[in-house]
Length: 324
Image (tube, rainbow, N blue to C red):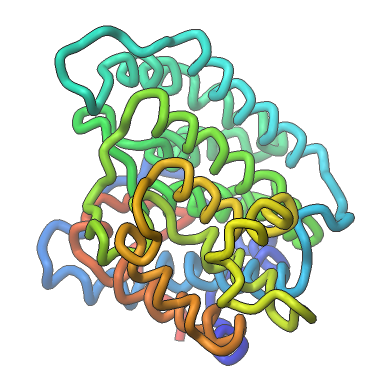
């Protein structure tokens, strides 16, 4: 499915050319306020661009390890610096004593720093002639770290980070030869920071389906992580529930890093606390796992109103109908 489903959206190859000098950047806003609006989302240029971006990266990482060699551009280095700053702020903002076990209010202090600094952090990533895009792109960065009111995090926040990276491609800050670094360095570092946030501030899963969901917090690393395993000579889907395999190979494969984190955070039999993943371990090939996860991502995340109602649209990810 991933092979045949390359959508008519933007890819890192052409995104840099999509934004003309005449574009007027705008602060993104919500457009999906009722369930009937979902049709507008699925027809939008934003949907085509976002899914095109996810699927292009999916193709790019097939059969490649996290430890493989790839180009690291100046923008990628800057993004790692930005994520390092977010990480440092967690160290500087310890959890506070409070009666409630979950949703530590110190998270709001941490978030307020990002809220104040986001535009400046993003402006440092952009080509000089694209600095006007900073207020627009910064919104996606702020949306990508969880919700400060509810102190929760879920796949909608993860999608905002992918949208943030997609926008950086559209303005030419990231380019087609950054594909592997986008997933293996930038997105992987983002996951590390998000896991630290979730653990430090005991964040609630946003819209979690509990035992019936794929994971409490993430989805994309399972898609891209399963793509890494396509055509692997020895490791099959049935192996990812074997603790020894996870411990030996997690540094090479994003999927196993996710399983390792789940094993650290949850107790009891894997089949009980992560039933969907347990079922996936019975699928015959990684190619089928990858295709199935893409279908599931569309159905459970991209086409669910509770997730998409929070998505914001601007000039780079537009609610306007996609080009036929």
